[in-house]
Image (tube, rainbow, N blue to C red):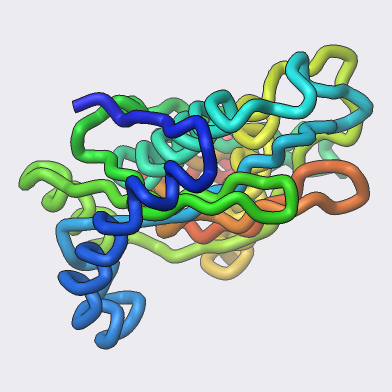
Length: 246
């Protein structure tokens, strides 16, 4: 099933109003039981905002302002990226770094799976245009294997971590809306890992490997002209290498 982007705001509202009302009628009991109960259902959901007038680090998007059609495509790409990070997550290798030893801090992450924006399990439930931005709510209906994967992310030796990350304040070339937001999200993951290790390790390790996933959709905002994002993560650490090993 192909997700259809509706060109005009009023058409978008008419198309999704029935779906949204049905969604509310079915899942209201889950909301009433609180956020954590919702997260344990077979549906996860999130919201993104796409600016029609995109400007970042001195760069303006090729199309300015964006058409509703292209803004909708960007929204679906971002939603798919965030659902991928929630369901599949990433493996990571983190060099913690230490200035006194001239060791740089570095995080390398690798996606463990991808959800495409044309996935029939991804359903847009509400859209709105407000303050020169497109707001989109979407649900992702988990199949049985994905439900089991989500359960793993919430059990065992999984740690909770959260932090604010930042995108670059200067770019020679603009890599695109989604690429810049990925940079900010990865920086948030780095800061969350560093914070989690401070709380659990008496001595700063040299390297850490493991797995990390988004716990929910992050909150993006512009701070001093650059993307900032507050995100919550779930972390599984599989190996810690201390400085004493070198």
